[in-house]
Length: 281
Ligand SMILES: CC(C)(COP(=O)(O)OP(=O)(O)OC[C@H]1O[C@@H](n2cnc3c(N)ncnc32)[C@H](O[C@H]2O[C@H](COP(=O)(O)OP(=O)(O)OP(=O)(O)O)[C@@H](O)[C@H]2O)[C@@H]1O)[C@@H](O)C(=O)NCCC(=O)NCCS
Ligand SMILES: Nc1ncnc2[nH]cnc12
View: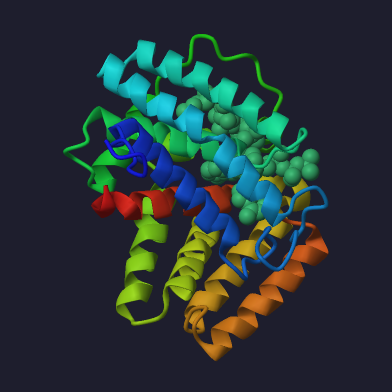
């Protein structure tokens, strides 16, 4: 092989590439209400775009290993779930080293980890509906080595009775399959550019999701502001329209005022963009 030629990539490497690409696309997408983007840190004192990009790149080895584990183990049962849990915890540790302790992508490791594994289990069937269904079956299996977690998500689930990241995965990612992905395709076929189509997909996810990050910081009132505000942008014509952009600006200002950040919806947009890349593998 010539020195300037790259070695062919394995399936696991290509899946990790697509997942990291999707994370970087999500981080760079702007203007996202309340979230870190090209404009700044949103409602986060401890995150910025460079940190999100570095965090995304740090997850490549973990995502590749998750896909490899799925190929090696080959079926949906406890051994694969246990291995994904172990690799997920290692990935979180690598992320926290890269970010000096800031939780940039915990939810993304969970969602994309399950999805790369589900894809690698049957690469011939990359229909998003079937990949998310396989990921859901994986998420339903208990991780025998999971530590007793004291997470924000746990507190919020107990207080407000919502499902959170675990249930979203166990149900086969309804926020993506029922909202984000159809909106992405609808906005594209309406002829808007790729950036507004992705923003509309994010808003559709925000309007449908019980995001435990928002509930943690801003309670039920914050979640209602997010969901109603996201719906208002879409009903006004989406982020490509003048009226939609006005609603989007107002939503951004309200979320910043409430110190509310929809990190869960951001993770699910990355997962949605990953599934959308299915055709390019
Ligand atoms: C099963 C886990 C997902 C753990 O879930 P749990 O709900 O117990 O724990 P959390 O630590 O709260 O993590 C869930 C993260 O998922 C995102 N998320 C939130 N709501 C939803 C939803 N409805 N659907 C899908 N995803 C959702 C969200 O991640 C983003 O937010 C992070 C920032 O959160 P936080 O630290 O709370 O943020 P701040 O507000 O900044 O904190 P303060 O400043 O106020 O202190 C950011 O990272 C985004 O990614 C939730 O945080 C799973 O994680 C797990 O069990 N992992 C163990 C290893 C494992 O098994 N891995 C499996 C590999 S496939
Ligand atoms: N763009 C973003 N801003 C804040 N939290 C996030 N978690 C994942 N993506 C994020």
